[in-house]
Amino acid sequence: MKLEGVRVLDLSQFLPGPHLTMMMADHGADVVMVEPDNGIGEPTRHMGETYADGTSVWFANIARGKRSLKVNLKDKGQHAEFMKLAQQADVMIEAFRPGVVKRLGVDYDAIKAVNPGIIYCSITAFGQAGRYRDKPAHDLVVQAMAGTANLTRGMDGAPALTPMPSADFAASSHALSGILLAPYRRAHPNAEGYLDISMYRSL
Image (cartoon, rainbow, N blue to C red; front, side):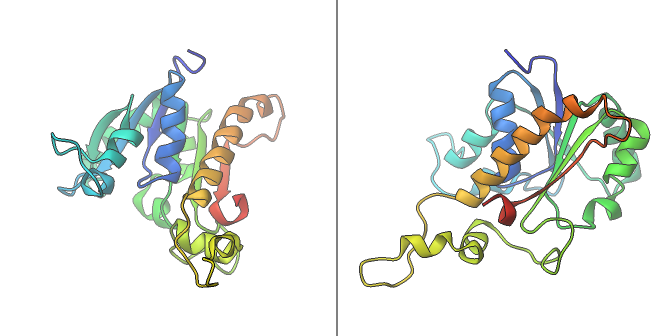
């Protein structure tokens, strides 16, 4: 397996980040889903169609090949335990709105302080800078703003739901390529291990 031995901490939810780490797990990476300790965990555990055992189809797909850990990053003790894991990780993924990881104490600078070699990937709707940076959005809004939703109008010209979450998939694919290319930059004296992935720009 090409990514065997690569350790990944994934704080993301729903699809772009989990789809990225699903692909990494498929290639042998050791992926830990860091789920919020809020009684719900990864929201897709309870969304959409389910198998006979109650597992949602969505969750079963994005969680395959991964381990799971519940963490409350606002709890000092649990935060400290998470940072111990971060010291041993090769890659960390997060998909909060800009500024949230700073408030939680798990931003790139905080992680790099305990693990200088970390590859840290942030996935957001619109990136870490620009006039839309603080706007929350999921795939359908990004597709509408990028123009691809216009491609799926019905014969009557009325808007229709897009059949594929292409903004999610575009972002996860760009994130994967960036993570896999990042080690090649290590020889550069000013190389940084931070990746800013925008769903909007990816699409």
